[in-house]
Length: 367
Image (tube, rainbow, N blue to C red; front, side):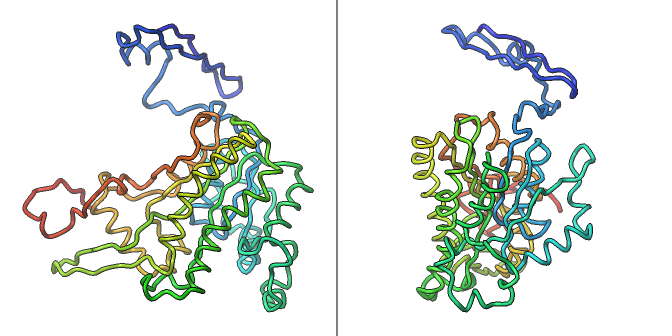
């Protein structure tokens, strides 16, 4: 192994990173030698320069409060040096901007260096509608929409282009299913299509309209889709060993499956045509305001804790940091991937909280 030592300087100076070339006898090299040669420490965090997204512009679609994954992603990108633009659902825009202006989110805006995350601009956005021609008259007349303008996907992309010229990072953090509490067999066509439209096609639409204004190149353009862990049915057990079945329905499980498939297709198309990377994050359950609409989010969190390999609370920041990694040159060869950030729950084939396992003495953590 021939290696060039990287020189990691202080935060006020540039970071020079070397490239290690693996020769034919690389099997003889140990990790310890490699780590020593490269000054790798298991406890020293990567310097921000390694992330190399300082000054990049990121548009995060789907930020309406300060306790969801969209907000966490915005914070992590800001901490890595990106300029933050957000798209907020039109009916929530006034409350979000007012809370931001009055400092209600200041506690949540604190970055690791003690500064506050700055949001350069907030755009009204309803990703269910591609262009003004798609908006029904009753929606146009709705008082929650009447005070805003240029909020369809096409119009927002045009506004961002006019304001900033281009962006480097695009994040899709949108989902809605009006019949989410219904089993799929009881879901109406209207409810099913609404879930797919808001949660899945909005992803395609965002790429269609934003990719033309993204800076191309595998080290520049990055698109990230976020979805909630794809539970169709969860079989949970009460303390009395009775079973309750929780349903993530209304077409939402289908919409999430479509997102996973579309990520692979869009990664190929955007990669070949624009040299832009497209990846997805499948996040574990989080008790955000949006998730409360499911109705049993607390039980899902409990289920995850009891059954995931890592028995700990999932932090929104862990999802945000994963997004920052995917947006950086550190992930320059990663595209079309689904990254699970769920304490390993996706790897489990069976719920270990089942009474059938009660005598197996499976290690468990206490809350």
